[in-house]
Amino acid sequence: MRWYLFIFLIIIPMVMADTTIRNGTCNVGETCLFSMYQINDSHIGNCNYFNYSVCYPATIPITYSNGSCAAGYTFILSSYTENNSHVSATVDYFDYSLCSDNFSSCNLRVACNAGEQGIVSLYQTDNSHVSEVGNYTNNICCANVTAVVPVVPSGGGGGGSVQKKKDLYDVSIHVKKNKYLPESEVSATIKLINLGDRPDKDTIITYYLVDPSGNNFSESKEQFYEVPPSVYNKEKCESVGGVIELISGRCVYKLERIIALPTNTSLGDWSFNVDYYTPLQGDIYVYDSFEVVKKIYEPYWLILVAIILIYGLEKWRIFRK
Image (cartoon, rainbow, N blue to C red; front, side):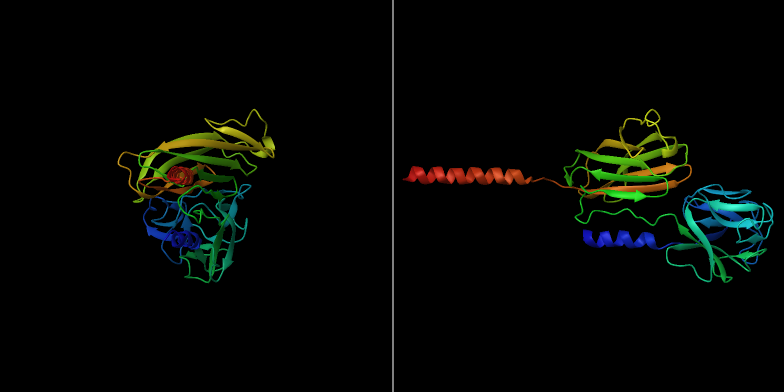
């Protein structure tokens, strides 16, 4: 059963959803990219300028302003004015630029490739009206920065290490034991490594347990100072309650964290989850699994019992003589 779950988790994140155009505001967990007067053959404006919102299916950082994209941000489209405007798929064709660091590239395609997400379609490359994805043949297709997904260890039940990489951070978590008894304390190591070379204010991590039914327990938050390698020094590499390793001029926060299983703990597969957020990177998560069981049989107890039995039988054999 766990092997099938492992395959399922690998496949699902690779299915990229296109934007959704909603009459009104975007849903919780979505990001409004811009607004449209109507779903097809439309001008665009800032979010809430027109009634229709172009909603990206996750929380991502975007900028829509007069000027070019900032360093590290990917160009999506440009507009002549902030509101009630035509658009272009050419960088700096118009003055206003829509940008995000969630994407590694955005291109015009007849149909988006696997692993890309459709943003909107254009009637022509420049000075164009826009429509929902697929209505015109010039679709703006954007690829995520990194398609690395959390991986549950193939053996199941924790004790492995799962990891998520993006442009700024590399986060992994390792649960110490495969199996725990109900209401015991679950111990895990969380590692947070800065990969980027630009400050992004603070990093916030949230860690908690998830039971077999998907309920969260014992959520805690911690905050860390981001120190890119270009301005790295030992004094700046400070953590909040964590052990620091200095690796190749990078700050590595190594956190040993313990969460007690709740009263009346459910048996079955649990996970130790870590969500992390930066103002430039948005919410991402990693997790490692473990199992809650009634009893834990350690191998060395079996060896000890076997030795006692052998010793006892030998003594009985000698006594019988």
